[in-house]
Image (tube, rainbow, N blue to C red):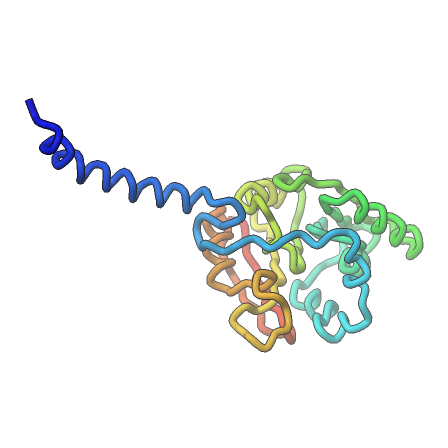
Length: 231
């Protein structure tokens, strides 16, 4: 029989390997951190910050119409605004796809949906369908959407893997998933670090969900336009 000392010596490599494995598993399961890139998820902006979405400077800082020009939206398309908030981009998309098109405006906060609905009524926009989503499911119909737009939203997902799966299911084959994200590579962009993303981070995370990064459009003053395609 092995004595206690020899037993400890024999088990030492096994125990060391188990300790390393435990550290790896803990890191992969760390709350609020993406398992592929290690990116820390940003907190969700609450409905109390809706005024910031409507600030006058936004036209200059984000050039929303220029961003939509890059997407080549056509009349009759079915599109989605994920994390639509109070509808700042939703109504612009609705005008571009026209009365024969459709916009699903998704948000997880009922208060944002209420603000969106008031805006639609005020601006007499009739081709938008508000959708109350969940933090891990966009609650959209399967294989119906030509393009999804996420403006400064993806980095806030607490369940990005599940959300990407849900969005992929809702896109038609060949459909596009578009992220607008502030450039983390540029330290002069005056946005908190966790609310920015690099192209490499977005590519690694989104392509792992079955998309392909097909274009990086640099035309905006502060944001990446990252266009992914569902095969």
